[in-house]
Every structure is written in structure tokens, then in C-alpha cells.
Amino acid sequence: MKDSEKQFMQLLEMQLSLLETDCQIYNFFIYGAGHAKRPDLARQVYEIMQRNGIEPNLSTNIFMFQSYLKSERISNAFNFFDKFRDRRRLPRKLYNTMIVGLCKVKKVDFALEFIMEMRNSGSFPSNQCYEETIKLLCKTGRFDVEINLINELEKEDFRFTSFIGNVLLFHSDLLLFHSWIRLRDTSNETYKYSLLGQLIGIFSGYVKVDQDIGNLDEVIEQCFPLNIYTYDILLMLLRKGGMDRAYELYNRIVLTAESRRLLEKLVWKQDNLVKMDACRKNEIWDRDGKWVGVFE
Image (tube, rainbow, N blue to C red; front, side):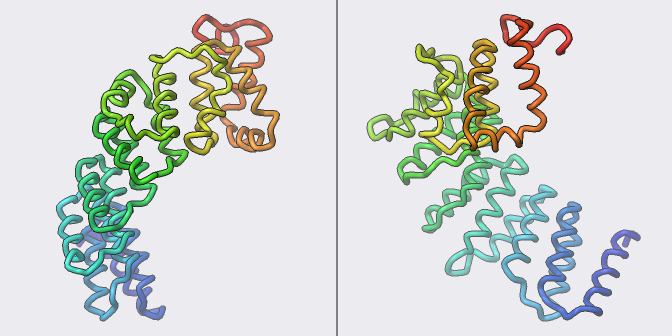
């Protein structure tokens, strides 16, 4: 046993001798070992816990799952999960932990399998499960799979979170838009989903709009709640069409209290907005909306 491992186990023994033995102490050590990507140590603590007659609770099992997944010991995570399958109903949090953890290590196909298994068992995955899955599908360009998943969500009247909406807009390109057009079931399409498709077309550059796109934030808000990242993505889009439009949006949104609150969080972007203001007044940006001269 290495010195670091020995110190880890000695610290555990010391804590157990000083404090009343309960799940919390073991959980801290299992979590710490998992964070250090040492699932072997986490497993040792788990087994010591059982030998000492302490029944692992839900948090204990979640931390064990995470320790396997963080170190990409996928088969170990599956074997550990299988021990709970014979129970009448698996806790929803165990499924959620597995799905999110698999996405974190880029195992989206496994994550999708667990999403389907969870839904077939009568339980609904958390928003974070769908957020991480859709984000990974976007990043890997698997738009067909993503749109099919969105089709399933629409049937259940799923409400898009700001995170999912922002991910779709940020990754909007012609491939995503063409997948959307090809695979969407428009026969029963709701207004919200139809509007989202139009927004993806606009952000991809495929759909041209005649009206002032400076009001796009009002359109987006009909699809999902706006947050600071939405404004960030929208400003990037408007800059492509010229700095005037971007400045108009900035000038308009600062008039509302909610927008001021959001913009205050954009500490790193405030310098950019100051530059935007200066560029506008001094007319020193190029045709592509890039700053030139002393501001570069």
C-alpha cells in the first residue's frame, strides 16, 4: 500500500474512533476517493462500512456510482448498478446519477439506453439528464439522434430549460437545421416547437428574416426562459449582421430592471460592451463586426 493510501485509511480509522459511526463519515471518504479518481479506495471504504454493520444509504450508493464513472470504469459502474435491479423500483436518483455520469465521460449511447429504461419503468429522467445528453449530442454532431429525442419529449409536453434552449441555439448550423426539417413530425407540432425550429434556422443562417431581429429575445422567450447566456448568444448573432444591431439590443435591454440584473453578471463582457459603444461612436469596426485599431 502506498503512503498516500495508508494515510487515507489511517485518517478514516481516526475519524471512526473519534466520532459516532454513521453513514456520513463513510460518505465523505467515498466521495473524496471518487473525486481523486480512486474507485478502488472508495470500494474499500464501502466494504469496511458494510463489515461494520452500517447500511449504505442512497448518498453512499450515488457516490460509489460517481467514483466509477469519473474514472471511466464503466463496467464496474454497470455491475454495481445491476445489484439494485432486483429491487421492485430503483430510486430515480440512481438512474439520474448514471445518465449524467455517462454523459460526463462521453458515453452518450449508454446514457440514451438508461433514459429509455428509466422511462419504460415509469419514471421520468431529471432535466439535467436531458440537458447533458442533448449537449453531448450537439457537440458530437449527432443531430438525427438529438431530434428524435426532442420528438419524444414533445409528446410528453416537456418544457425546455434555458440550458437546453441555449445549447440548441449555440450549436445551430445547417446540419442541425436540416436534421430538424427532415425528422420533425409537423403533423402534431406545437407552436413552441415550431417556433424553436424557426429560431434554429435563423441562428444557422439558413432562414433570412425581414423584420428587425433585434427583437429576437422576445421570440426566444416564447420557447424557453431567457438567462444571461441567451443574451450572450444573441449578441454574437447580431454582431454578424453589423454592430448597430448588437448595440441596439444592448441599449434596449439595459432599460429593464431584469436585464440590468442579468448584465451585471456579465462582468467579463462589460469591457466588450464598452468597446462596442466606443466602436459605434467612432465608426471603427469592419464589415464583419470585428473591432479594429486600438481596441484589438
